Image 1 (cartoon, rainbow, N blue to C red):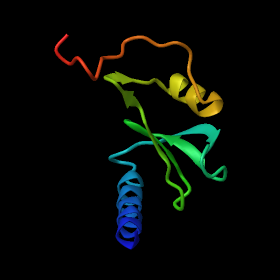
Image 2: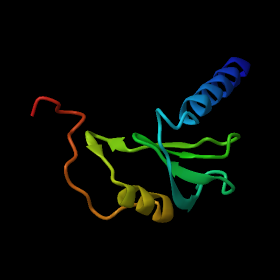
Image 3: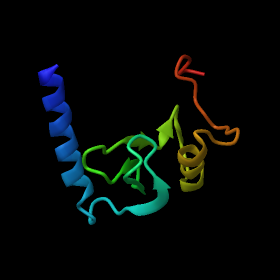
Image 4: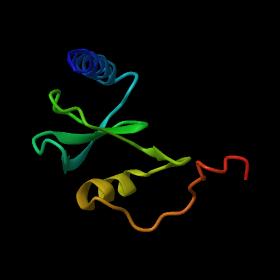
Length: 97
């Protein structure tokens, strides 16, 4: 349990350092509170939407089953916990179809 907590803290620290480098990862405010901690604001990055509260740092990845969600779809997901019906997903069970 201690090892897992140390790895999580280290991962959170490294991720924060990388994401704070605006030249590598430009960010945009989503205008939505974090669904996990409720105090941070979710920030849009290229491949992830992440809470700006360093104690939380909840990541929500944009790519799901081969489809990258747009800012609008991510905003719906954060605000409502779901999106409209979406297409364009690739099966994870039948990758050769």
